[in-house]
Picture 1 (cartoon, one colour):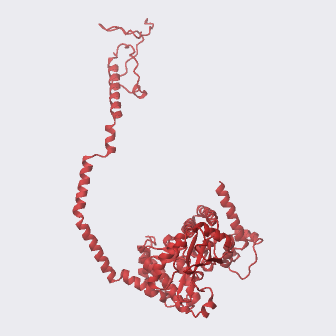
Picture 2 (picture 1 turned 90 degrees about the vertical axis):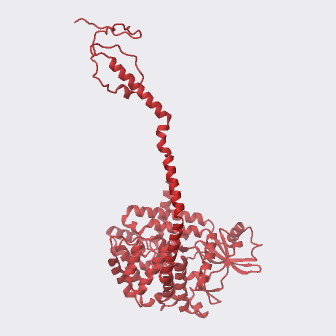
Length: 567
């Protein structure tokens, strides 16, 4: 009950903030509302601030920043769901800046001391906050005989705050699913669970450090992206230390020009670096916005902040590669077959029907650069098709979809002429050739043949084991089957029941049909035995006292009742 009240109070605060920024019932959609919603919108305009020239997505981003860290993360994930909030709003939320006021240097030093056991022995000096986000902030420090490093420190009491806010949001998602069956296709509860899971990983900087170290190995194999090295001796759950990167953030366009950066090469490196990691290794950076990438003085493209990482299995990688390759080759039937093989399209739809819908999406964008492609129109068509064919959200592809949208946006901002299809072609064709080409087919055939041969070699041992198991089963009956006749209580009950049945049967035979026999001694037995019918007819009850038979004494324990025998 208390948690329900707490969730309701937090949601009321959220609703008030959204109404203040005119995003609870945006005025842009007034004509689509029913009459009650139009009246509600009119009343809410009293509390809304006037923000002329700002779109719904921009106002929503400002409202989420005002609400705090949990809602900033929700906004970043909402950017991956244009099917929920619309394509335009999703694109505007994709530029949501995770920037908050920093907390004091004293609090940061207290956290470092508590986690690492002191600062004087580990660092020669620690600066003020160089940047602050919703989860943590970054300080610059000097390590003796090593140089300048970056220290990432979690915000104080951030775990408790996020847990309360995410609990309220999950409560809201459950209410939405309960009262709106149509919303279940969008799976709002699963969406909130995905955000919560990602936030839990971000709150343990040891996991982020491990992800950075792993991604450093992955990125080094192709060289499109470069990752700073982790200082494990100065890292813990709430503190992480890594190399300081001296470079220009991609958010500063003029500084990039002054540094002599080649915008076209940077855009291509971002696209290929993402696809190479996702397709070849199934492990990719899932928060590739401009603020997390730097153009270093060494000419390399550096990437930081590894709190949100994505993984996809081999099946999903093959699905992604074949779809991209099918669009590149304009083989829409193959793309439809891949969707059906992966189980993404219900069986009631044919491959030809889905291929026709995909052709309507792919043909308008074929051969065009990013400048000539309306990504809003393309995404709207994709989600219209997914709704038409009853396709549900695939949880394993949520972060992949989010990152693809981010990568396209960053690359296009750097180079408006960037052709994402041309940039991705070498990576996709390399993967297809390796995984689906003749060499891959031959290799899989050899591997399958080797597995079959190994199975044939183990066949005698397998048969012997099966025969031994069958012999044991036949000799040793299962314990459950033996319990009913091994239980002594069963036999005691059977014998007792047989004795009672014999006593009752003998008593019924002893009763003569012409005279009433004296009442025998009462046998204590369960009621269902006393009411059991006898084989013969019931004896007729006579009022006269019974005469004892010749040579038979009258019973001493009971005397037949004296009745009037006179006619």
